[in-house]
Image (cartoon, rainbow, N blue to C red; front, top):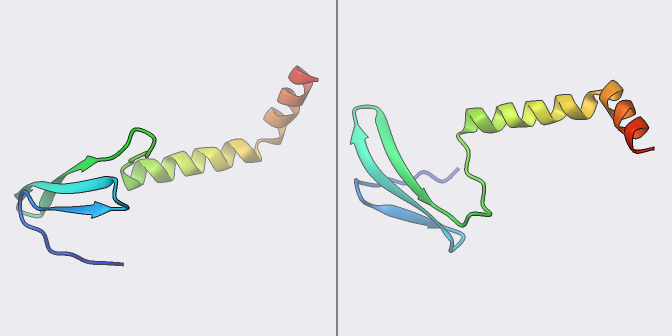
Length: 73
């Protein structure tokens, strides 16, 4: 993991097309702004993990898979 120090209104660039800017610092909370192309998904980690878990559950649903096979022949 790379750890960087940034002050308010300072930014960093990732992969030439994603910019992360520190917008506000209040106590132990930091507000960041992210500028990225539309095709680059940006999620909070807890939301990303929920999506991953839902995808795993859907892939493991054998009954649902069988129903789809029946539906499309």
